[in-house]
Length: 228
Image (cartoon, rainbow, N blue to C red; front, side, top):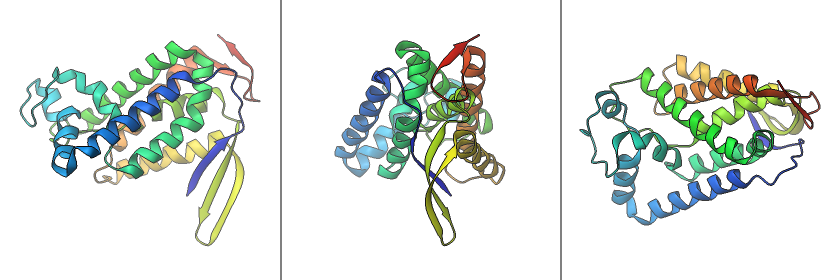
């Protein structure tokens, strides 16, 4: 198991939207928890993206107080528990600042939301009849990870490595850390992965990677950049 702690890839801009997105996710989660167990379930069901509803254009499973397709966006700010939220925010904080630095603030926001919507589409395509609401920022963050691999493949990532009794912190190129992450998503998706939306992760990662490849690429050192 590889758990990234931080990267060694300085950015030149303050990551305004990374910070804002993190605060929004944390704020929504705390608010939803104050609703109590029943209210939490109703809140996440109402604002999550339900494949059955989306593919049929009918609000038939849970009452949705907003336009049905707006759940493509609202679902990106919902999380099931603290571990779900914490893992997503950790990856966004480590890798998102460089992508916002590379793209600029507004372009990053558009990129992030687009990857999140694309990830939701991937999940719905994998199970259009599902009545389980899709929630979480991980699809959008997967897009950030794909973009990071495209732009900074050789940037060093300080990583906690768990391998049986071997536990150590080492520096590993981003392409290995995030490549292993992507392979795990593929393996779990092929195994039928339970309640986790593996196809959302896969779709978001591929879209983020492809968009960044079209936009440009950073130099191997992970600091300067050039645009095509």
